[in-house]
Length: 458
Ligand code: MLT
Ligand code: ZN
Image (cartoon, rainbow, N blue to C red; front, top):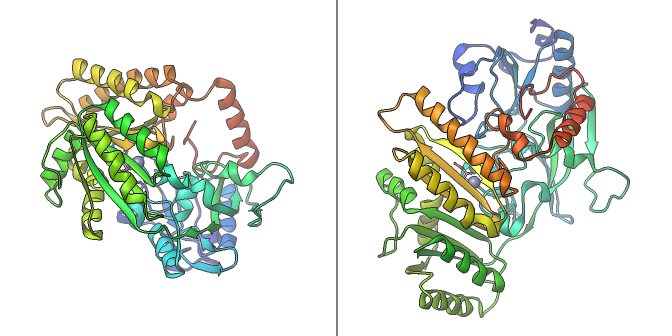
C-alpha cells in the first residue's frame, strides 16, 4: 500500500499510522475483537473522500468508515489491515434553512452539537441516546440509529431529507435533494440509511428539525411483573403520544447503585422499573396522567411511583436508565439487542429468562430496553471465575437459543445496534435466504470491488 500518492492532496495531520492511533481508531465500543488497521485518513470534504476511494481502488485496499466509534456491533472495526476513513475533520454545520427548518451537516457533526444547534434555533432534533456526546450524524445515518425517543419521533431515517454519498466506485451521489415529495422512482437515500458503510460512505446530509416539545413529565414506576409493564403501556399509550417508555430490571438498578452516581427516588423495590415520559401539551395532561397512574396502582400494576418535580429530578430518573451501559462496562458485558412485536415482549422475556436461569445460573443478566419499541437489551456479565474464552463460548451457546426463539417469534437479531461483525452469523434468523441474496446483489452494484467495510453484515 502506497500512501505517498495521497500526500500531495492531504496534509500531514490527515494521515496517521502510529500504533496508538491505529489502536484507537481501529475499533468502536464493541468488546471482544482486536483492531488491526494499517492507516487512518481524515478527509475534509466529499471530494477528498472520493479521492480516497479512487486511491483505494487503485491500491486494492479496503476502507472502513469511522464516526464517533460508539457502535455496539463491531461495524466500525478494522481487523485486516484496512484503511480507516475518519469523519472527525468533517464536522461543520454548513447551513440552516429557517423556512424548512432543516440543517445541512457534514457527516462528522456530533449528535449533541446538532441537538444544541436546534435548541439555539428554538427547534429540536429528536433522535437521542446515551452516546449523544460522541456519536456522529453520519454514523447515526449509516446505522439508522434509534434510542430513547423512537416511540414518539421514529428512527434517524425519519429525519434525513437528503444525503451525499461516495460509492465503492468513487462516484458522488446526491440523493433526494431535500425534497419532501419526490415520486420519481426508487428512493436510493433509504438504501444507504442503515447500510453500515457497505454501499457507500455518507459525507453530508440535510436533517429535518421539529418543534421543541413543551414541558416533559418524567415518571418512574416500580412494577411487580412484566404483564403489568404491558398494562401500564396499554393504558398510557391509549391516552398519550408517549415520548419514551423504557424498562429496566432490579439487576440493572443494582449496578447503577454500585456505580454510586444516582439512586432510585422510590421507596419500594420491585423486579421491574418503568420510565415514562409524556409531553405536557394541554392543561389536562397531568390530571389525566394521575388518573391513569391511580387506576394502575389500584390494579396493583404499579407498586410505587414518582413524578419528577424539576429538571434535576427528571435528569436523575433518566440517569437510572441511561447509565446502565456505563455502570456495567467493567463487567465485560456480552450484549444482545433484539426486537419482537411489542405484544410479544412478555412471552419472549419469560422464555429467555427461563433458559438463562436454568442453563446458566452463574450469569448475572441485565435486561433493559425500549419496551415501547419492542426492543430489548440483554447484557450478560462475565462471572469473575470464568476466562474470557469460556465466557464467550457460553454466550455463543446462548445466542443460538436466543436467536432461534427470536426467529420463531418473528423478531429481529438486531433492533438498533446493527449487524456489523457481531450479528453477521445470525442474520439468517431474521432475513430469508432470498432477501440476503438481494442484499448481496445490491452491495455488488454500489461496491463491485468489495472495498467498503468488507466482511460486515454478510
Ligand atoms: C441503550 O439503549 O442504552 C443503548 O442501546 C446502549 C446499550 O444497549 O448498551
Ligand atoms: Zn438502546
